[in-house]
Image (cartoon, rainbow, N blue to C red; front, side):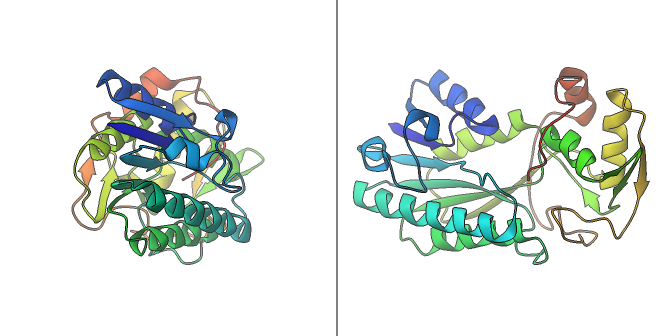
Length: 258
């Protein structure tokens, strides 16, 4: 079975590709670096020839509202049209828990638009909505920093390790399409500010984390349960403390991303 991973050289993509290759699947990691560009369409037809499954892990280089919307809509249309022509049998996409509950956040609106394109494409699909990745806690802290104080919302948070995300993405790609969504999250749920404070303490960052209900995330306020699954969710296996033990201090500074 030929599986094409769009965004296959990124954080989740590279881990997913490695897992699938262990299972002796024909896996192609596609990204602008490998000559495949979903925005311009360059290399898409060639890479999708003979593909049975496409995993879309593409991201927007900009988190600005309109830019992100344009990227996900253009990329989504190009990719889905080329998949339809190639006869792809399963489109797997990674989205975000709460995309439909946080209209203030432009990046989430862009992901929701991407989901709607997939649902109306006619291609069998599975959408995996994930909570935020633990790997981005450093970047999230930096984005809320004002001097030595970091203001973070006390909304509930249930972040997941990238290794867990990749394992689930690979499993979904090898299973039949659900023509629906699944939600995935980390094994622990706590206020957002507590996760950030624990992370900074673990890496020896002396900045103070302040719980602030008005603190913005990606430019929007977050309601108490906006970022966590409300119903059934598949939980990752890696506890926060285990991840911290393995991650520090290499993960200390990452760009914030969902």
